[in-house]
Amino acid sequence: MTVRRRPLPGTVTCILVLVLLLPTAGGAEEKDAAGGESLDVVATLGKSVKDSDFHEITYYHVEGRKRKKIKALVKIPESLPLIQDIPGRIAQLKEGDVVLIWGKPEEREVVGNAGGVVGVERYIKQGKVLLAGKGFNVDLAAESDDPREKGFKWCEAQVEKAGKGNSLSVTLKEASYRVSMDKSFRMIVRTPIPEDAAAKLRKRLLRSGASLILNAKPTADRPEGVSDDDDRKTYEAKAVVIVPRSLSRIYGTMVPVK
Image (cartoon, rainbow, N blue to C red; front, side, top):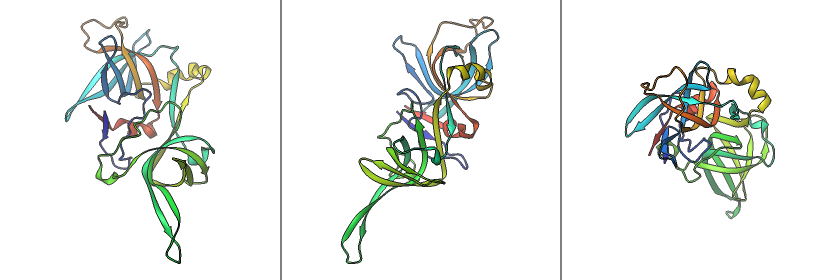
């Protein structure tokens, strides 16, 4: 499954394949083992259903060139651990950290004054997205279908040195690379929210209008007060990543293609 993105002004124009928790694509409905349709989507959280753990969500399903807006009800149990993606800075990285970089790896020979090759310079050019933390699942073989991103790929690398600003060098395939950042560069840090903090922050984090990366399974449970004639399907969340508004465009413009 490939993910294409509709570029928005001032946003990253790369494909994000995939910045999710499980090996299915954002915006997708997949058959689960029971024959129902599980969800792995980027969604907007709506109002909570009174006296229940259910929330309304809105997401988009794509078939061919058509993009359909869908509403559903999802149960987010209080016992479910919450994860948050937050903006990061290169200076936060430490030597040995494993990161994922969307950019263009290149190498070139260095020719000395006498005309002979004296070394090799290696770069990851135009780094647009850097993912740090655990729980990301990307397709390392993915290639962009954007002609402006020819040669771009996900690079799984280990930090050698992170300096002030966006100065970064990494080890990729046992070789040292310097990373240059695109002007649209974004760094995303995936962080589990401690259980005690999640309990206190839950209502604020799961507010109406919040952006979520959601993996959910179908459930026969329905909240009280919602009739059987209501055509919104019901799901129970298996994983939830809360995405801040400053990053939501990166995820929210993803368009899945089967």
